[in-house]
Length: 366
Image 1 (spheres, rainbow, N blue to C red):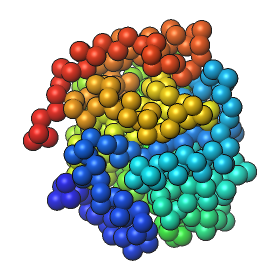
Image 2 (cartoon, rainbow, N blue to C red):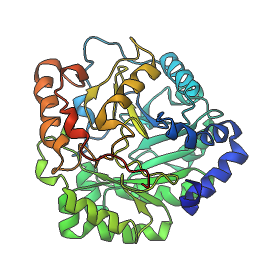
Image 3 (cartoon, one colour):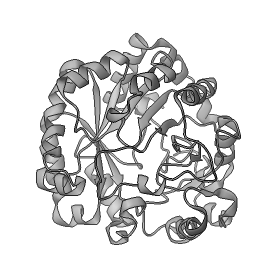
């Protein structure tokens, strides 16, 4: 695996070895964990859904109301989740929402996770990333931000429904570099972005900052639920893969630390809602268990036993490819069940078509 890592990934490991030996020690176990078909996921923790933006594509609208009467997570709950994740040798937690920079307990959340035992990151729209705020984030132990920049100025501000938001993100990039805060630029890619050439123009512009961009396929959930015509298909995914050979960017089809996961679900990523539900990813609104009722390892193991999310099969992005069987036959079930139950829906209520998931077994040479 290590021989196939990118220079960016190798440099990241060197930094971890120097600054976070406990995290590095866990990372060095991951090759064996993958052989044993254990999760090496980063955890996206949707701690709170408060946000001062109302972005066009936002997925959190589906999760703002608690499902099945569960209470909201507290900082103490996050400490318990992090303890369980550490015992599973997981290495990375991302504080998400909502907009974490407006969470009054953000410092307490970072302390509860504990930067000595995890790489700690944060999703942000960047509105509040002044130099003072960036320095503070570094001081409290944050390693990296995932900064949403969805095009050049006019496109981004329209998509985010906030005039001036693009410029604040751009102004933050050199400040993050100055103060040692890592940055990954998150870009939501729609069909319109590809047809108009906007994505290529955006990636060309970002080259000057030497930042890595993560290309996210648009998904029809939350505020974007009625925008199914903007969801990419297999041809579009293949085109994005070609762009990653040209630009400093990656998709869910890219090698990650030398391993080919394809769809990350439970293997390389899972999501925890603000009410303790554990989902395969932030955009598959199906819960495999709740942390107020079961242990994290029990829930993640259950997810990995599902053929759609197993190491045994290579899946395309399940919820962000309009050609996929999962998108056409399983996601609509979740939407229908949610009309009565709300999101996320119980995994036991889904007809999983498990034999269909077995059509693309992983080959050893992958």
